[in-house]
Image (cartoon, rainbow, N blue to C red):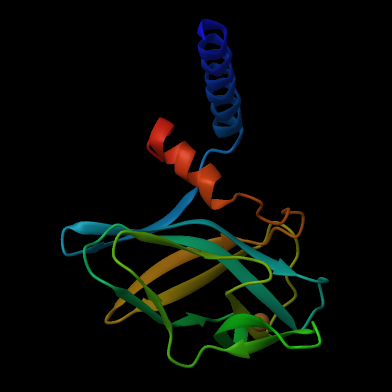
Length: 179
Ligand SMILES: [Cu+2]
């Protein structure tokens, strides 16, 4: 019985050490914060991706933490770098083919929740780019939340790996590091 307890204890310590190392290498980058009813709406982990420097379209990915007590609606996006910027979702049809569609009604983010805009999921689509975008270039955008705007300067990062954090992982990180 004692042996089992010690084994679990050592395993738990090992998990904390691994998470600590992981978190040091993955400091969150915050891009913008909006004050809404005394609490914050925070945008982090934002990056722009284009297939090639002369591509006519690109996509933006990011995380929104709604730390407020009310539902927030991300209704649209503005940018000077593209003729159109739309909220998109990815849908898989019955033949397993992925396609993108515009989210007309905007994206609702529940109170005290996190919305992740990621590859293969929701994203912002830039269509008809007015300029070539290369790795490291800065793209200014404005996210529209009801009557407020969040201004962000987002870096083009074509080398970014696909997000691989899962829910339980984030949950444990939250418990141990409160972030
Ligand atoms: Cu798209």
